[in-house]
Image 1: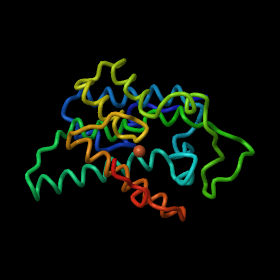
Image 2: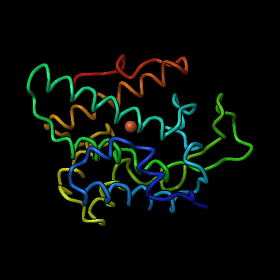
Image 3: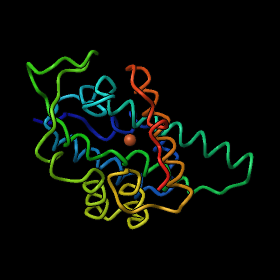
Image 4: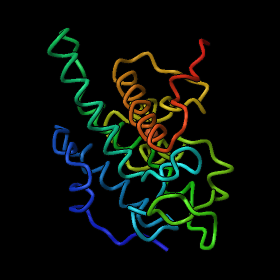
Length: 202
Ligand SMILES: [Fe+2]
């Protein structure tokens, strides 16, 4: 199975891509999404869940859109309020790609437990069980030869607590917080406990 789509549809899903200045980076991000559309077991982007637990009622696409919008809004504010410089190309590309492995981490589960939303039942794939979240995104970034590949792969890998590597860059901080803000919105909507309440000092 696969999702039938094209570059125009991917650009329409993630309008912030137009603010990436480097056309090679912009096109590369779109190309990676087209690859994942071809590789996934799902047939529609809107059916892919954000995850299989507290946010199984949220869509992956809605989450990626939310993270990207929230991160860019925060970048606008901190630049205006404090003069912090943010690498917009890196920030937008990393936000749009941060969960790019998720279309491979779940698959349709016809007859499975209902999700409590319009999303169809889903289950974890063998890929999702065996490959650490974030790793495939880094693989794709290098495979496509994206500009700033090392820093971009670093951002994608370090956004998740599954990684034992952390980033010290400000772009990583914006991605990390935006990811939590958007994730907690989905968790609260589902009646769950926000991730923020589970934060522990390392
Ligand atoms: Fe995420």
